[in-house]
Image (cartoon, rainbow, N blue to C red; front, side, top):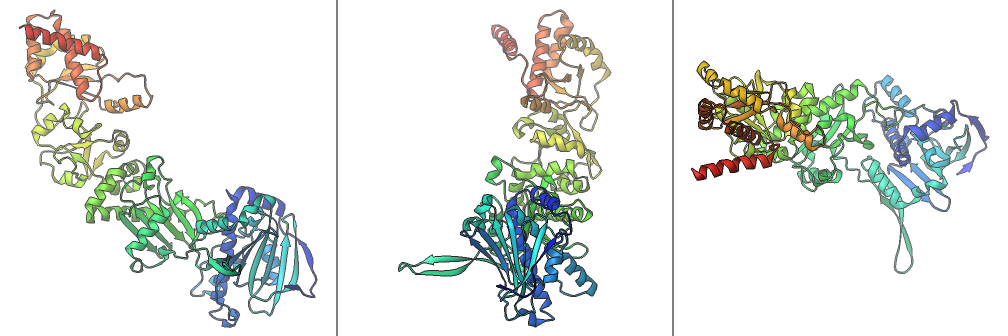
Length: 633
């Protein structure tokens, strides 16, 4: 490269460069390593431009169609060069494009194509003109040597230290294209390291369409050295290929590459959307919770690409948080970006992208449930709680999510499940509501006294064994297909049918219940009930009160004062123990054993609901007294 006769000139930038460069290098990018991604993206754009122009002007190619982007680290000179054989720039173009911050040649190029209504337009990455200036995050001087296609060695050199001025001079350059030479700062020499460069290319630009290369020198045993070009990027963006062109092994290998999972995914979702919003996405539903989730759940979102270039990982805006188990990529060519490729604008297009991707994921889950049920059960056992979380967060998809839930119930064998739809279809004609019970385990729940009258009536009850998330989503799902959801441990919920306590029973027990109320200040009320067929007593909560198991969980997390709220003690007037107690009361209302029996009924109700008695030692003493008395008699 040699200077030509045209004078070297110095110019000032047409904007407040110092302030803008400070903003770009300190605010717009969260880490400076992305400069390489930006410059590779610009090089890729330049190649795409000439490929498009050559369709009508083949002479522009100059027999140079070996498209590639070359990285040239020079440790001695402390320079890193990013070279391409793309369209190149003229002197006027260099002054216009590199002399004005936020002026994008790419954007102008697209506008001109739009005006021409050209077919087969290349999809270009840079929509704004600041990506180039990210170079000043690592370089104290940048030199651009370029020659436009269709000229004979007439090139131009642009150079600036980013302090308000730049110089331009005409030179001779043998080959078409652009070399961006970064004179690295003292604290940026890490970017001369070949391993670092390989890692950054794999991280950000692995799927760029054109080959990214770097010279690699090997030494033979005889001391001779051989230099060859090492390809740094795989270029295998399988999400851009047709579904019928990708094998299951390729999908599985790609999933393992982008996730922390060692297993194959349960389902692949490959989307190519066209029309008002165009994008391509490749998403994966894991077979089960990956091992890495044990210590940290993943951030929600997908890897966001624009024309194969990684923009954000993960991009949390493209999927709702409750679908954080989904791994994959989305490549959108028309998604608007802010002045940085890292800061996405909030706009209707982004909202539309999230809605579209969410719909595809939910359809994929439905297909997995319908077509590979065993796989779905395995997935659901590990990650189904996130779908319940979605019911509380995603109003628009609440019904779709409800259809994806699986439940154990009184009538399902252990380890088997049913859906809301299956529950409703199996309901007897005389059942009008969906009943459920929340607790810590199936084993505890299915022995609960709350279920007795429902079992007697032939009604099924859903057994929910993830108390924290179940109590979180249930208030947001008051009904399903017109059937109200009702917890069976609330005071106002009973199995349908005649369960009325008779006036005679009320009269007979009234005085004793009043006495119990005095003896048991920890309960809100003592009353008779017909909800039980086998148990003597149970505790129920008011409709608006917090369930006991949720109170227990909060206490375990250090919340609350350690005491449970007052609940209602219900006694079964048909149970032998309760009948024997009222008979003793009728014989001697001042019998001191009445208090002992009242306490025993309350303690057993506390245990039956899954709580611990407040005074375990006192409970043991009362039981021992009864044992001793019974043994003597």
